Length: 53
Figure 1 (cartoon, rainbow, N blue to C red):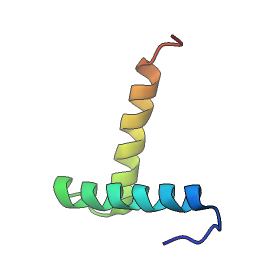
Figure 2: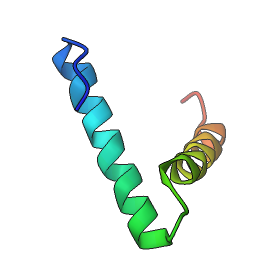
Figure 3: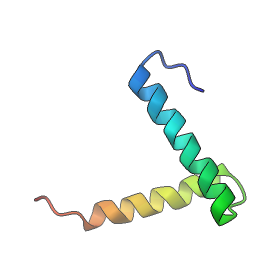
């Protein structure tokens, strides 16, 4: 676990690592970097579909 000394950031990093671990396991990515790239692409695509409202 990271030690940023900021509880909210530490929690976010921990949660992200759990998501990446789950992606690697369930979608058979080669490693966490590949899972991160996929997660990032999906989140950016979702962001791009959001309206200002």
